Image 1 (cartoon, rainbow, N blue to C red):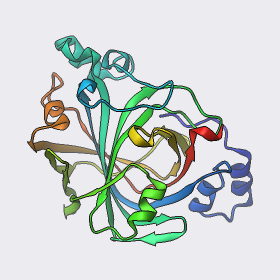
Image 2 (image 1 turned 180 degrees about the horizontal axis):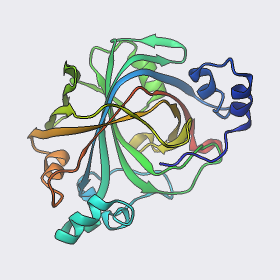
Image 3 (image 1 turned 135 degrees about the vertical axis):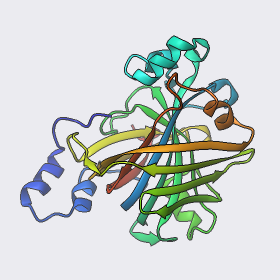
Image 4 (image 1 turned 90 degrees about the vertical axis):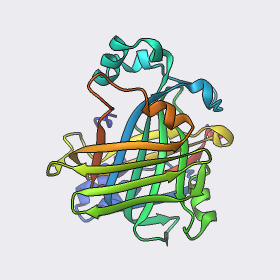
Length: 283
């Protein structure tokens, strides 16, 4: 996801002043008309597992004009998917998704800090294509299919205001050693488990930052999208052992292996991200 080459005028002005914090710089980039805003900072881990899955089993309602990209389209820019399809053409019409877990020391919604601390959360994004709304910033390459927060969260109403797709369940994003994490996500028919070990020091992102992206939602929330502004990503090499109990989309998906094994585990840390929620109908 490549950020735009130039900063918005409001953000450039704040940067020139030199006194703005990272959070202030990010907030300055949002267009007017947001329904709600939120902030994640002190991100200790963002851990993602890419995968292919059969979209026929999800029956997800998408925003008008949007479609999920087929694996054969994603393969044009993703070497792992290309290698998989060379070995097995069956999933060429599958969708390409990324299931991510996050642990953040601070989660603020509309100016109110929420607990627990640190806040674990998870989201499921799928590669997609569709028309850009005039309020969007950056590229819109993903659609949100699911998002999950811990049952013990305070202020359910605040979370669903900033993320109308939010579901509340048992979720674990736990550091069990200096370079090891344990993950779990309880879904209605299956539970995702992972143990992740980080194997390299952090390397700052080489992309231009702050970065921006826009993510439409789906299902009953297909009339909404979020604009994200982020800064400070650091990447680390990691290996993950992923499995599921029960049956469901991720159980079937994780069984689809790349020729050299599973999709790699992606690990990032150290970033701050702000988001703003908008309606498509506002255009």
